[in-house]
Length: 63
Image (cartoon, rainbow, N blue to C red; front, side):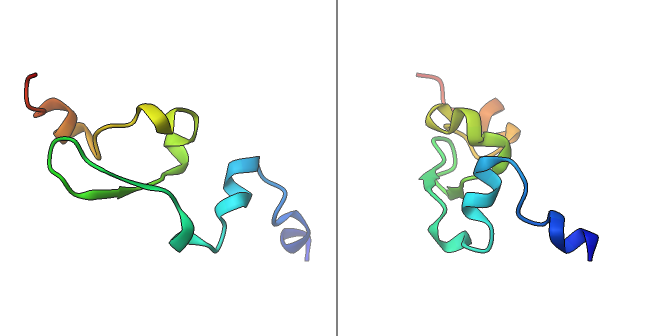
């Protein structure tokens, strides 16, 4: 019971997307062209995210 009472008392961005993954924002990776979906770790700088992974960031095209 105690766990159920605590459920939903998280940080703002986590609760906004819980159980509604179809509505998450998405972008296209600048290196590989694949679609990437919003991640909690990108919440603070989503506007600046360009690459889907460290591998793509390292192998980005110069220019």
